[in-house]
Length: 115
Image (cartoon, rainbow, N blue to C red; front, side, top):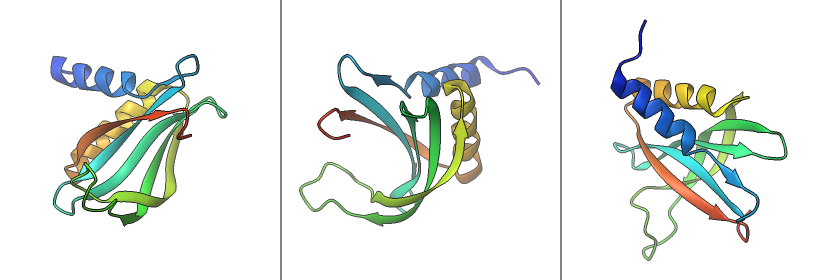
């Protein structure tokens, strides 16, 4: 089946959102949010020590408090859903999970002081 222009655009955007930059000390993670339950359902990131992309399924959550900028609960525990060699493979799985569970993405940035 041929990808539509929109699907190719989304897949590329998802893949490029998963990065780690050693020089600047910055990494990203992409959460898939369940808006009906207002919590993270899956979280994806690149693990440089394993040279792999990982998607975790969230299993426990907490609010960061009234002063936080998040409108959803943040995962505090998770189990591995899948490990992928390329960002494109991880992006395809993220898109499939989003479709299957009606989830929306949220991009986060982590600076070296945090990881």
